[in-house]
Image 1 (cartoon, rainbow, N blue to C red):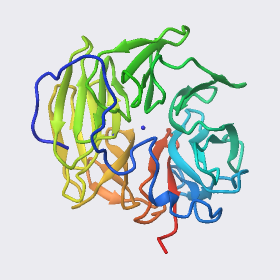
Image 2 (cartoon, helix red, strand yellow):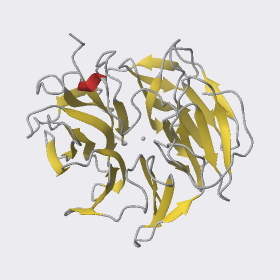
Image 3 (cartoon, helix red, strand yellow):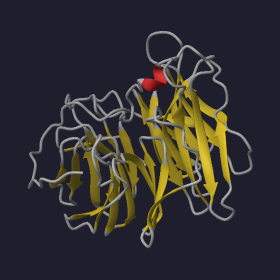
Image 4 (tube, rainbow, N blue to C red):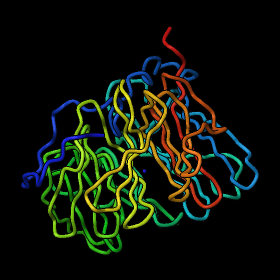
Length: 352
């Protein structure tokens, strides 16, 4: 929903401050430079979704509906529910200084086009976690919302936090990460309102991926593993790489992506939840920032040159028929279900 070489042992625990170190271009919930080049031109910036249907190999590519604010928008995440409902989140540019308007676009299986399902002024949205089309969480700047099939309801925010940079549902618990509060990682029961702070590294986390009771996450050039007993290990750390995408095929089969900025692969890595990672070779200088797996033998990667690749264990990497937005489109997100894979992406004209 994201490769390094030196392996550290156990990293220090404690209260988690906001990480001020540089992060890779366009991490979740931060402004997209290219996407804001012509932000006051309503026609210059579009959020789009393309889907590849497995049964027919048909590809469709559609834009989100025009913004009611008359300006462009920004994509920050995509999620496909088990029933095929497609949800895209991000924000709508207001055209004036200050926070933009958070938005959720939705297309149900019976619908042919997307519609705006939810907006929240001055709260830029950025991450989904869901179990069904009528049980969806979305978080962002000073905002955490739950959709129960009837309405979108605000949830209490973790104390001391002011944004949500990652979110996950694990069993009967909701886990969130914040990059701008006194602590980074919080959890609460789904049916309770009390948040508990989890000791963690002093980092910004843009993804939370559970493999059973083990948690995997990344921050810039570091890949972290939280064990069920609360211990944290650094399992990869390489200058220039970044890990912001994971696919958990099973509790003993985890894939990660991240590539190396301007360098060479590995783009795809695999672990058996044993502290060891195997590099899977990919085309040279590929930088992948999005991952979704149909199965452990068929994994889709969204790359930062705009391409969507598929890796199959028998044949390796190959291009897909999904649209290639272009090299200026750093924002690309993948999801899917048993019937399809979708890519939500930012389309911005080249600089003039």
